[in-house]
Amino acid sequence: MSKPSSHDLSRVAALAASLSGACAIAMQPAPTKPTLAPASTPNPAPSLATKPTPATPPEFADRLRAARLQTLLARTNFSPGLIDGKPGRKTRIAIEHFQRARGLESTGQLDEPTRSALLPGDQVPSRQDLADWTRSHTITEADLAQISGPIPEDWNERAQLAFSGYIDLPDLLAERGWCSLDLLAALNPGKELADLTVGDEVTLPDASPKPLPKLARVEINLTEKLVLGFAEGEANAEIPIFMTHCSIARDVEKRPVGELKVAVVASDPDYTFNPASWPEVTNVSSKLRIAPGPRNPVGVAWIGLDRPGYGMHGTVRPQDIGKTGSHGCFRLTNWDAARLIRAVRVGMPVIITE
Image (cartoon, rainbow, N blue to C red):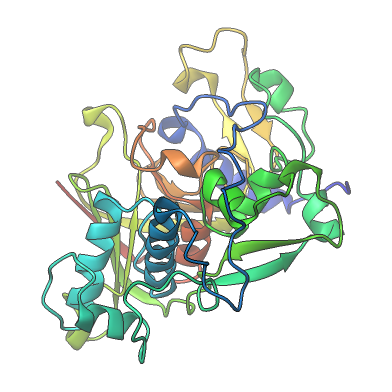
């Protein structure tokens, strides 16, 4: 694995203060190796061109339908959260916002007008095949170079890493597909995902949304744990074109309310671990630099706000978005943070409401 290129020193210095302090993430170290759900079913998963046979277990067919819906929503920039084939509150909220954006009745249900808006011409409400919502991914050398192994529990050890990469290949592939590890396994029955190598193919959900235009503002709803993006122009002033879920500060006193502004944006940032913000960590006496990478504490993107130490950023554990609290920042999945960073600008307002 090659060592990532060094950052410009002035850029690192400008970001250090923004990335330290209140943004320190309250997280548990990722497990050494994620536990996957059983990858096999009584019948193999359907091919890209065929529907499941009648013998397909009903629960698996239902999960394919649900995962398809979640993938189609993600394509429209209204995120259902992790694509897992287990729709719940996050999927319902995504449907509601998509319906409002398309001028439909906001039911939160996949009714016929909503289905037609998601995929024009789609006449298959219970579709189970994979043809229009998955893609084939061939593992490359570049993929393997993104893997650096389990995340050290000790921050001193973590600071020794040259690159904050993925835990293992399933970890990488799940993020490529914006999906859960058990859905990844279900889409690739009979494959030992951790043992695959260059040239092997896997099936992933195909979210691939259109890039966001430049946004006029972002709103963060603390109660619903939502991040909403609004386009420029009076016609779009009240209807978001982007919606995703986030984690917020565990401590109510560290949840800012009101209007802030974007102060700095950075892709693949370093992270400064400040022991002053982590009283529970007793074996670190000075600030530590944590290398960039997808499993850096702030993930692949940092959008710093004009309150020191606060910002929107990626995450180590996408499955925990909306479930766990941070020390003050707004935590997104890496793929949402990467999309958002391209649509914001320094000085753009970020309005935080309760």
